[in-house]
Image (cartoon, rainbow, N blue to C red; front, top):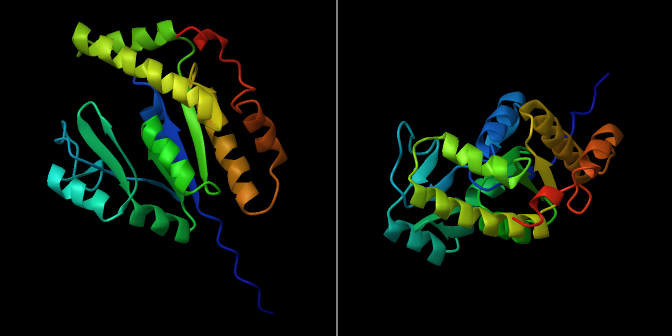
Length: 225
């Protein structure tokens, strides 16, 4: 007696954005570690490697000229200039992940997230990560003890723009007050949206995800940021 092969799950683009200091990268790493079919979408950038960063693993490090060529050729699904450096996602990487039925996880800024959503409106889910309040964001930035006052001021100014755009246009908002709780919310959002793509329901995940929908989650602490 033969059995039909299991259907490949649909590919999903899970976009995470946040102001600097919100804990987005930690959440992304935890999510990737828990999901075998999740892959990190490696961005191209014109900035130099930092610390132990490796080409092709953390970023694709390219020259400004090479990046301009990728833009001209339409080879980027999204790109933006951040702090004087360009960052972008290779269109081929996105399409390969979708074809393989993977969850492609993006750790990018709001400009890039908006472009991914516009290019792949059905498959892309955008999630904006926030600390509990602006005071906590500033404490986290200062707690790094590596940035000057000028750098901190610039990051806070950039954060105001990011928060405004994220709260206005992203699908979901996750308040990262406690890491395990934030991760559970992100897991529920991913599960609910992937089930939707497959044409089925995940009621338990949907119930959690609903509480994180933009316009539903309480962001009162950020109204005057």
